[in-house]
Image (cartoon, rainbow, N blue to C red; front, side, top):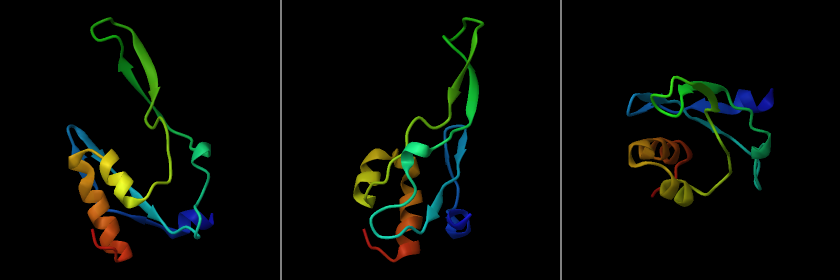
Length: 94
């Protein structure tokens, strides 16, 4: 689709045992795709810990469009490099 064609992969970052892959998407002024339509994959985890029971959880629990300054407040410090790459991509200084 048109959105997939405009997506640009940002360099991956590592946090703990996970590698985080993020993409920048060019959107028209006023917003992009509806975050409420997000469909997440699931992962399986033993929960509660040491219970022997396995449960499935969504990888992503919510999505929203936010200004870069708000994203900087929400992201873990190890994920800030994603915003640095995005700022460089769009030519915005901190």
